[in-house]
Length: 555
Picture 1 (tube, one colour):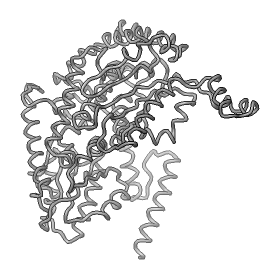
Picture 2 (spheres, helix red, strand yellow):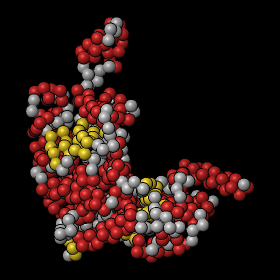
Picture 3 (tube, rainbow, N blue to C red):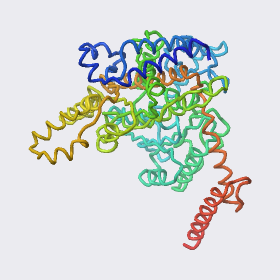
């Protein structure tokens, strides 16, 4: 690591050590302008980061770290289409997917924007046919249910957006998502659907993903079992893929295959044809607004100074806690029901991107990288895991995400949601001192003995950091900006940690071993070299599967 970087990392840790003994109560009391100064707004998003355990000098240290790591150069390289995914020798250009039609973005000298616009037009033409009722099933009836079959990035992003924008969705169409290869999810859904009016969108770049193709094949068998013919498949199945022959062999008309490119990573793919289910639900115009919001955030990230740059500020604050305070996790709590899928989406985006142990040049990182990202709906979380946030022994930084205007949230419901979001951030920062707890119990009329008994349990330290992120409204444009903001936050942290945020080699080993174990169920032989625990588990599973087959045969 260059000396300038090493020096900045050392200064960051020294600054964090100095802050460890300070309380946010003190910092607010001595700095009346803190909240006004430590906030930033852009693209319909307001972030109050004043409830973080740092001061202006610490922020300057973090900005200097970003400069020492050449963050500005890394941003330029990504937007310029350089092959920054070094292990797979690919450009990383999900930002091109939401660029305007007039842009000129080149990969190996080729402007990819016309290709993107052509695929968007292809998607829009199909979506308009389905939404208008012109696209008919094999019995001549319009589509009423759309089932997106994919996994990982082919599921989490579209699922989140469709949930968030459901209030503006087409009134006739219902969108469903199947990712888990456990047949319980697919079979439970199929029992609710009508074969005559259901459209399946199969998302698999290679059209070989085991979980997706298993679910798609079962859906295909269900469809044919209702009396449809092979020729009818093309009216009820479309594909998002790049493997024309595999798509055709499945029965999908290649004219209804929607493609994307190897410079689109799975967890960054909702902006591509992988977002077809989104466009079917909300329409091409709203999908265009989603892209426009993301592009606006791209431009903000690319040009704004660090002190006003939403993604960079969030990234630096995250690094501050991971590497300065030893925080191992980060909690995300959406205080809007439409955003309830956000924690799951961010788990993949963050943990698959930056959960790395080696630098870009293959050396040990030498410091903690991506935190464990987790969370749930904020109001529900208050009755589940917030106890740990307030009084647990570990530090858990948190993002609280809420919407100021929500079309699906009426009063007094919305009042309660926003009040709780603001109050929980305040409570985590302030805590409750022994004097405050004692005064409260005295006001309740408790005896001195009871107060002495309860006092240790009713105090908590506070000084727990939060970012409060407020969207003006949950619209396609602000949602696009929000998701792009988090994408760029993750990228920024990857630059600072010097890891490749765009590969995911760690997911491969489990898949390889699963294929061997699946073969062992059929062969009766445990895989060569398998440990005794694995062999024992294979034997138990094999016996259970055989018993199930015997039961089925005797029915």
